[in-house]
Length: 415
Image (tube, rainbow, N blue to C red; front, side, top):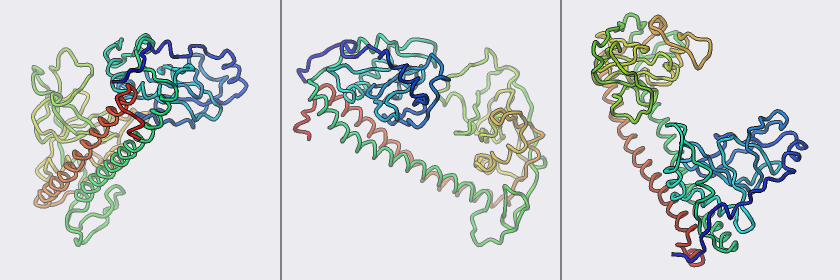
């Protein structure tokens, strides 16, 4: 363990805000603006956005190049959002009020301070001291002021920072590569499903045009049909509300709420909620345009604001689930949704029943479902392995930072 002296952070920060700061911004006119989404979880910054200082709210946070910003609100703080400001066009700017600005004093290197704030020990301890309502908790300023840090001479701080820049840069590059690989796997998964449900499994099968934009050409022996002839609406209500509560998401389709980590308002009673049986198609009316729909795997209940449909004998529930969860179908149902704003469109039964569906023979639907299950299982195994490797890299990243900023690594030997 290092013999570096330890001090509270408040004694290492420059608390003075330059009196000339706002005057300089007024003279500059357009200044860098830093919303929360411009700050990455690995210290990345997007400083391309500018606003006019005269039009800016007085409540914005003032910062200068060389400052370190730290998100104060959950989950941004928990996810490690923060950065060293070093690339603004004017050397200064304004940020969201959900940022703390730490200005290093003469005895503290800015990059070393940044690494202190992304040390897992700093983040974990900060989480324990958050205050406020659930979902809106914030790290109190006193936590930052009183946080105790090891303070080597400024020359050693810079040596540690250069070492971490190199080592963390390698790890971050690996993480970015693996994240890009996950995106490719997700795209391949979507393509496999879309190709199977809309074109079938036989690439040599004769095709015919449907005259329907979203369907295009389909195998010549397939039928097409409006959904009004393929589904019936189910509007049965629970008398007790004691059935399994189901959620409908664009990410996971229809799943029991008990299997998900959800933090949302729950009604005092779910009596009167709609019954949804295994094999039924459930659609989140408000978020259908995002693809929030799918086939239920178990019996349960859904919000009375949702719509439930039972497929007839011409469609397999698993085929229905695969088709409704491809992006192009969500785009198609948007055409039949109602609402003033695109983000508030609702898909009512009369709109859903206008959609056209491809209807392969049942034998082919069985084959398509088996093919999708087999191929997506392979991709899901690759995804799980990649996600695990990313987790390990992030753990390595955090451990390396923690060891370096507390003097547990002899940088001269490591270099």
